[in-house]
Length: 247
Length: 278
Image 1: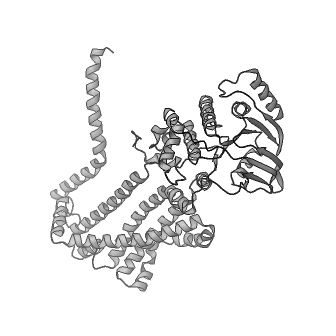
Image 2: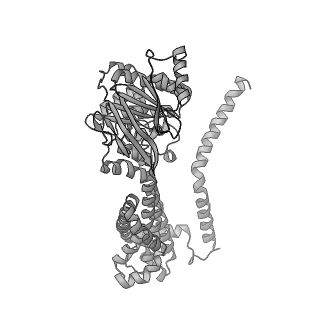
Image 3: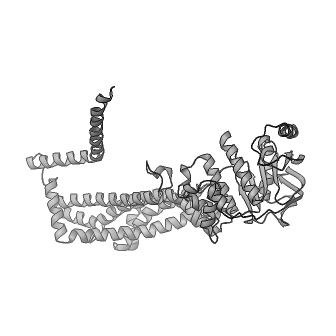
């Protein structure tokens, strides 16, 4: 991470996200029902809920992979259906291109000066020395770090994370949490993290919402000091209990 | 075991290792060599009729003779040219059609069942028809080779394009890659392993078709050379022709393998066993 510290910080900041009456149905079965939500620029929001609660549907709408049945989702005042480089999505799986070297994966979106930018982002996730490797030789955690670097390479204003750490072991997960928190504190992008792990949500987010049966069942701020390495204090435990009760 | 006893045993182990490496290198050639020696001995001793099965040394002499008078080079070049032109035409069409049906559903609906029907006709059964259509000139042979290579390349291109990971394609879309970039940077490289398997099959069909086509009608080429030699009972040349076919087939396969090793270095199945790092 020493290379990251020497690099001038890119403080691109975040965009705000606004949902108004957002509804999505599949074959007349509503998955999201008239969601209203405002995420201020730069906020770290965690969305918690059971499987089938509409979390991933919300994410696909924000990423522009689906269109809402009714209502709207806007990022910086523009409908989220338009795909923009300022919104980046980290999938559950790393989804690296197997036939491209790690560096080419990070710089997949190309654009001017992509190589230097990709190198900077690889340094940020601590994998600059693996730049010329094939993805298949990396571990699961390393692959997800490369995917994170790929998302950051576009200097996003909004970062969407769709349970990106679900498949990782507990220790790697904690490393990823610290890494993500550090990058977010530095760059200030608006972050939406989808997770079924309540502890993860409380450990990372400024605010947690619980999505249940397509509606927001709980919306609480997490006002704990950062960086949050230890989450064993009474406040955190109480917050986790509150969120769990709503799930 | 004491450290004193360990040292010599390690040396023996090292020697054994070197010996094993040699064995692994030689093993594939052991059987052909043994057959060659037995054949030579049998021919020299008169166990087999030299008219019907000449000795390897006689064939080697025939090789030298035809090499010197230029006929071997001429005939090989003629065959290789037909093979190459047929491969380019048939392979190009198969590749284009496979890409179209793989990428575009209407093309699949329109083309695929027709191709599947045609594919099951043994293309050598077309020879009488092809002679009626094109006579016995170059066109007939190139047509047959093209048909022979078209289907393996078509099927494997189609299959390769269809099996490209949807999730990676979706990622590329989300990351703003243009349709053209998705085709050239995601779909084609992803389909390449399958396309190269198709190419290797196609090369086999290519030589097979050519041999048959040339033995039926030609005035140059390896097939012509062997058929002509049969007329004059030059068994050595007939066998030489067969051996040249085997060598050409092997060479084409080796070329494809080396392409595979180079362009599929990312693929686990083609990975070098040690030293993954470039």
